[in-house]
Image 1 (cartoon, rainbow, N blue to C red):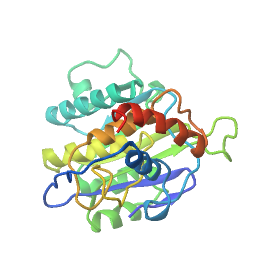
Image 2 (cartoon, helix red, strand yellow):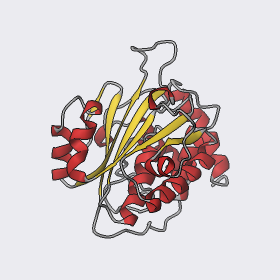
Image 3 (cartoon, helix red, strand yellow):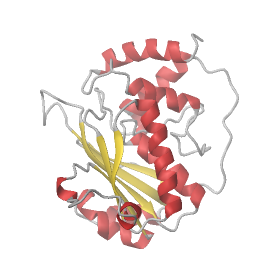
Image 4 (tube, rainbow, N blue to C red):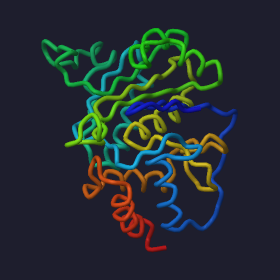
Length: 263
């Protein structure tokens, strides 16, 4: 379900008919570390493997394109606040329809000079492929095929690689998220939570029996406490963009031991 190429990757969410409850089982910090490795670095069925950390170093400045509703923007603000708290990273909304409507944009606002590096496209499903094609290899066919196959939400990000920037690899430059305007509220919520979290640098799914929203089967419609631990670990200042996988996992092991109460 994922398309990966160089520093770009596709994140998809196929919405099931009903939510599943996490299985009750004893989870050790070793379980969390193993799934963090899969979700952060990929490999196997989860996608192209990466051997270094990818995360945002610069502030995330969001622009929402499309005629959003107040309800959607309230939900977006809640998701943004939750992830800001977990990452302790700067995440701020720079532009939206509701901000413009309420006169809350700075005088002389210029989108090109705003520093926006995360675009959220809020449009009817049928319009999204054309409106976002420049971010998907300048083609509408990828998104059309994915939507036809049952995927509703998609995202893509661009990060530096050791080849493109040997001195500063693993730094996320920009990202986009597509959000069909006609989705029900609960689907907006799960889309935003998963896609926003994944473009932070946790882009892969796991096939393991592990309570996480990062899987296509037995979908959990919220971030679990273990997902939150992974976000916290990724944005721990000891994990640097471009940090080699083996070193990052050694540091993350201690972080999960602390966050999971030494289990």
